[in-house]
Structure formats: C-alpha cells, structure tokens
Image 1 (cartoon, helix red, strand yellow):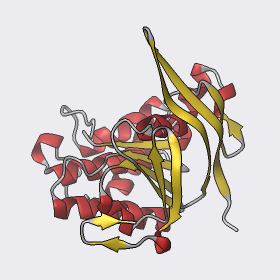
Image 2: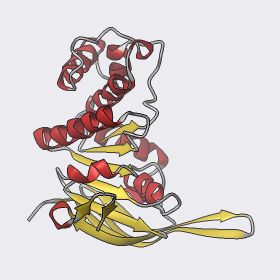
Image 3: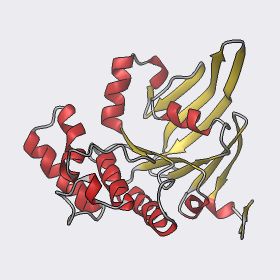
Length: 240
C-alpha cells in the first residue's frame, strides 16, 4: 500500500465577492501518495487552481484540513507556512518567474541563500540540480539567452534545489511548443521516479495523462472522479 503524504479532508473554500458568495471548493476529500505523479485536471473555474493552492500552502480553506507528512497546514501561522513552503515544497509556474539579471546558477541558488545556506554550498547545489535537468552547458546563461524550454528547466532545477518532498507545477507546459512541452513532462516524470518526489500538476494539458500515475478531475468545485492512468481510455480527441 503506498504511503499517504497529503491528506485533504472536508475542504471547502468560499470567496465573498460583495453580494455574491462563490463556493470554489465543496467538501473535497483526497489522499495523495508519496512519490506519485498526480495531475489535477478540470475546466477554467472548476476549482482546480484553488485546490492546488491549498495543497501548496499558498491559501487556506474556509473549513476542513490539509495535512502534509503529519503536519496540519490549517493550524500553522503565516510565518510557519512560509517556512514550510521554503523547506518542503518546490514550485514550477507557467511563466517561469526567473530573474533576468541573474544567470541560471544565480536563479537556482538565490532561494537557497534566502533559506540561510552558505553561498559556496548554494552554488554547488545549484550546479548539481542544473546538471540533473540537462543544463550543465547553460550554467552561466541568463534567461534571455535561453529558449522557453531551457527557462522552464531552470525553474524545475530551482524547485528541486531545496530537496522538497513535493513539487507543484502550475500549467508547466502552457507557454511551450508541443515537443518542448512533452520533453518537460517527461523530465518531471523521470525526476519523480528517480528522486521519489511527489509531483502535482494543475493543468489543461492532456499530454500529462500519459505520464501521470493518477488523474484527479475537478468539476464545479467537487471531485468528479479520481482515476488511475491504467484505467483511462484515450481515443483521438477524447479521454474517458
């Protein structure tokens, strides 16, 4: 039986927009396993990104709980949540969020420096993870000297630098061409299996299905279904 790393229990999220109350999440219950590759899929406005933010300690539920490795995130202070994010979670975003004044080493090592790591150690660790994602030949290149795919690899290296238990990837292929997107998906899948990192993506990209261990489908703020990859029936133009 796989080890459960993340437990989401009875999670609700409402947003008060003046006279309108939006129920973004409604009684969400799900277990996510250590080392698995989970894709959260659903149309825009389904609650997919809201759930993603709950798991990533970027937002808190209106009610219910999110527990990661035995730590109840809903009971932590803002400072404790920031510390948790910095030491246990790596983030990959569709817009890369790189600093253009820094080269690849600088972009990857900067969060480590903020976390208190010695500068020499941070540089060594940055070089190590950049080589792991296939950028050993681009260590001193700035983002504007790289392709979109290479920039996303820097972002993945940055996410790996603090040796997180979880990598959260928000639409990581949205700004990439088809082939580059497939390369990035394979890279994250390979890293998940090699390092035992739990990878969770929020995505519209059906190419993710081929590498995901499970797919969590969100619809109207609820869990529509949770499927194993082996149970999917994929036909040209459709998924069941």
